[in-house]
Length: 113
Length: 115
Image (cartoon, rainbow over all chains, first blue to last red; front, side):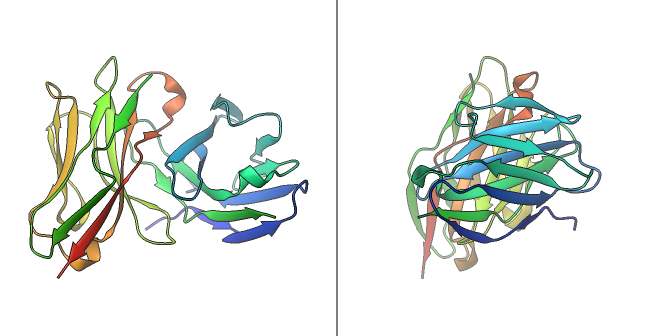
């Protein structure tokens, strides 16, 4: 069964450093998303991406965050200057369209120290 | 804006007993509804979804859920719990039109299955 692949599975970074989280969505999917889950809390929407542009973003997704689909297969989330409160599990997801289920990757656990 | 409420952050059942995880949604129009399961240190796996059509939806691992518009509910059930069902379960909602296709998740219910 097709999968959404996320790398790395775990990343530790110093506060203030830039990090890039990588995702390879399912190849025929058109919509791409990033969500995050702070330990013990619910899964929160960050951003959705369609047709090479952001279609919606949450208030969490401020100027420190950016997304890119550089080569038609990878979908990346960049955090420019990480803060302690960015520590969370970050999930990438993709879907063919609105009536279909969303396929999630297994996540990247980001730890900011 | 749409939202979901999951009643009970922790549910404990005996192996072989009925599993009932509650989810109520709030939306100005009937939304699309989803249940996801998260095993420890893993991602979110789709259990089942309701978009249109039959209101009783069957999913993987013997789970099913019924969309009840009058009660704005989408409770998840399984007739007989198995030890392997122990996990966290998330209900999620998506608006049918607009909203950028994003999913809004509930706070999750941790299911514990005891011998």
